[in-house]
Image 1 (tube, rainbow, N blue to C red):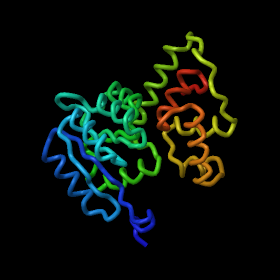
Image 2 (cartoon, rainbow, N blue to C red; image 1 turned 30 degrees about the horizontal axis):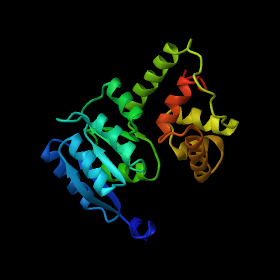
Image 3 (cartoon, rainbow, N blue to C red; image 1 turned 90 degrees about the vertical axis):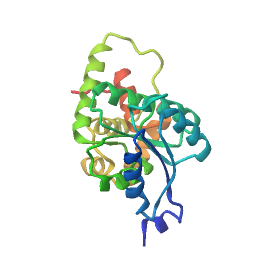
Length: 229
């Protein structure tokens, strides 16, 4: 059975955003070959991306960071406000910690460098559409470093609001998410099923009123629910 038929016949709707036409074309060709993925639109800057996302309601957006008129991080923030169900993957040449951290805070679910193999992009789209966070190992290390810095910087700040109570198991899952582990790895580590991990992650996000796994980790570090060591 094909992935498309497993999903009930509905392809994953993708919007491609990049100011370079050649990159947009390469991404479109890579995704067009997949039966379970449909490219529904292309934009050349962040402002156009926001307008198209409002109209097309894509499942996943592949978003460049550096663009004219409005950058990808600002566009991500706007799209997550207007179409919160959309998953956004930043696809960029920038490996700066600040860009990564701002993208996660804006609501991005994934962050891939443009040196990624083009045939890996369809699986990245499928992964974030299924609720996974997607960051390559080098960038995950940078993100954890940023968490450490934030944790130290805010160590003296008292929590601002009562923090929603997470169960002991939810805290275990959150700690493993913070280490960059995916659902399968977490399930193996805790001797539980992947579906159980997904349920725990969903409950964590609902309790914290957040959109992505990485946002949950940022929140937990900020409120000192979690220490990154």
